Image (tube, rainbow, N blue to C red; front, top):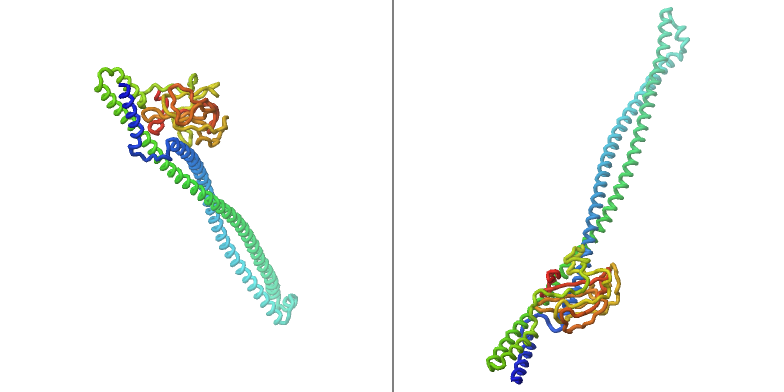
Length: 431
């Protein structure tokens, strides 16, 4: 009977080893679950980097667009001022032309008056070059004398007044023309200044447009990178899901094989009933089956959450919980449930609080990933050191490492994640 049990156990082991190979899956030998998880972490880091670039460029674009809008408004105001100045200069040109025409007309009148005066003098000269006394003494009688005296006086006063009046008009026209030309010159100076300001603002707009062009290019590049990273993440998530689906199918198939083996053993000998039951129990204990809740808390004695599940961190949402507290540095971290260590990193030496990521472990620093029953997985990040290695089987409550601040960590804490078929979920749902 013992020999039969050994044969059945050997057959069961063969079934369990061979079944996963028979289940179709796209997870190749080189794409181990550990490699896939690390690739996923790297993509998440890239996602965070490009998301930050995207957010920064969006902010810069909004700022530059607002700045451009202000510049355009100023240019529009300058355009309006230049248009008004042009109208004023045009109006002044019309006034200057009008005053020039009046000046030219007045000058023509003065020339006509001088011509008339010269003509009278020429007539007097041709009459014998008579003087005023000769004209007076040549009077025939007293009445003629009075008339001649009034004529001479009238001619002299009329010519003086006319010449004086015309000269005054010419002076006024000249003064107004000079004033208008001075106003025109002042407006032309203002126009030149406004045009200079306009050119300066247009230059600023041109420079700003160049900056916007580069920002839009960076924004587009970051968006394309995010989309590419998302596609790669989807592919890796699909591979991880297929891995766990294959693992689950293998477990179910092995469980069925174990039950069949137990049934065969029971039917072959009723006297081995209790032994068969023990064999069945032994077989089922080697099969990973979901245990529901009952996860052990990973940091005994420390329950304070410094970061909640899915906490908004601007460029991404927190994919786990952070457990912290005074004195937590270097304290034990235990496995939440029975399982197998599928990935680890213990190379990070940057064990202190920092406002940046040292890049170790894809941001996790030193970490442990454990695969559990039912496609579940737990991740323990930022550890000081590890006490387990990849491929090792661990039990619930077993110490797997110690709390630290490696990787992308601002201070001592445990980053704790739970995943189901590769998809993160709230760890607190297990407690």
